[in-house]
Length: 190
Image 1 (cartoon, rainbow, N blue to C red):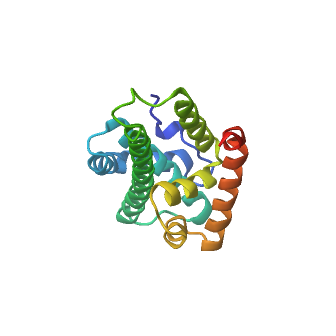
Image 2: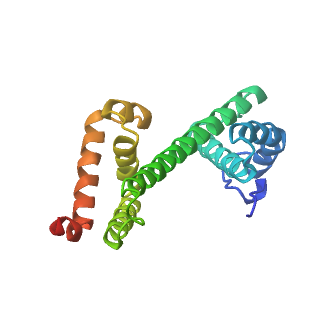
Image 3: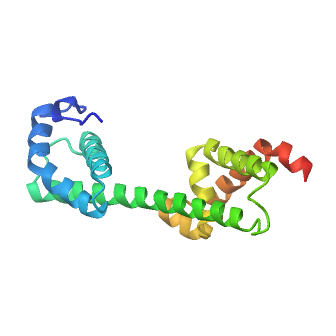
């Protein structure tokens, strides 16, 4: 894994790479320790989240701050906020994946002890569903997984994603239409 260095990150605003290098050196260790704690020792994940937090911070700075960055505490607070939000999003994604795995495992267990496992047809259907869900565009897949696998309400999803509940409903409708189209061959057999 290639680790981003201050010089390899984007610059192009007043104070550019020299200012980013200073901020990176000053706050890297604290942010990494915080994310390492949140990620429960998953060093690679903490590193990835830290790099993404610095990139988002730098993009925010380019878009919103034309003068200096203010106090070191303000910078650290913003970096920690980005890190926590990124971790929270990653954790939610992991929970969806875990829930999806549980549902698939439960489906395999429900074939009963008398059978030796899922039939070839069942495995093909499971694989087709999994591939179809993976093929969904990110925004549709996120809504679909939260609603169908996590059981979240449209209102809760809207709050999490900071979008209108009507947008959640539209995305869900689009996701279902996409899946229906992708799984048409299996639906016709049933």
